[in-house]
Length: 71
Image (cartoon, rainbow, N blue to C red; front, side, top):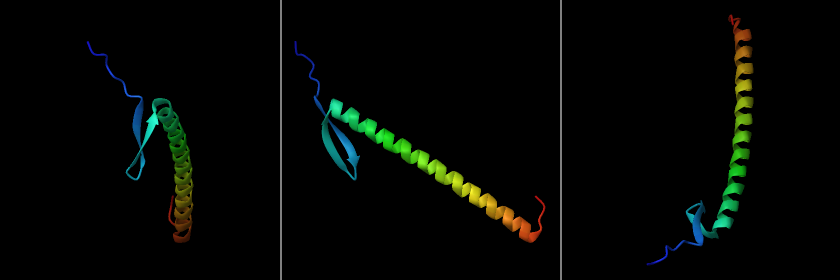
């Protein structure tokens, strides 16, 4: 009876069509680093959107005041 073979390496897509061969532990470490980076980018994007939304509200209020429109 044949023993099942398990791979000791895995190819990970690192972007721009490139793949890197990692050991399983290296792949998991790389994935964790990428997850942290993406979480940081999401947080920065969320803060940026909140700032833009606040600026839009401020401009709308200014326009209302200039045109003497009710709230």
